[in-house]
Image 1: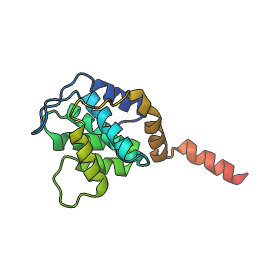
Image 2 (image 1 turned 90 degrees about the vertical axis):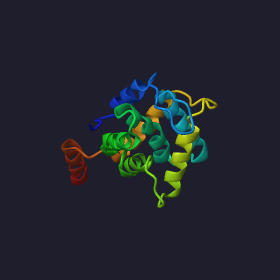
Image 3 (image 1 turned 180 degrees about the horizontal axis):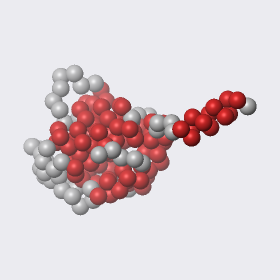
Image 4 (image 1 turned 60 degrees about the vertical axis):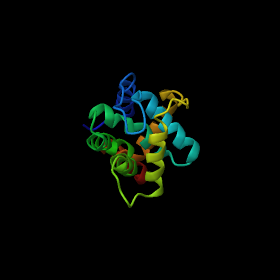
Length: 159
């Protein structure tokens, strides 16, 4: 599954509403939609300049919707779904988040901590629509140029 646009991703994130994640070792089941918003909000507060990290936190829950009960396979599917839309770094962070690794970089550690902390209901994560602009900016930055884009650039270069 590969998402073709931000609207498809937003639909998938909205589909997480009301879906309960399986309980982890430390927490009760969480609503995937709320969990995604809380994870992204925590990362926005702690890493305000790192939009890719924030968005990785937002889309991480999609994997749990696509593959309930199997965090690693769910993360793999979510990472694959957003790769062309949101870029390699978001793909790498989402894919690696549930895996135990001794070589985790600071961003991956921050993502894992926020994901775990967001399982509590203590934080209001806001609303999903607040993330649309960030998703659109990342998607625009990572979009593949189409034939029309290339022709337009060539036309401007000839002027």
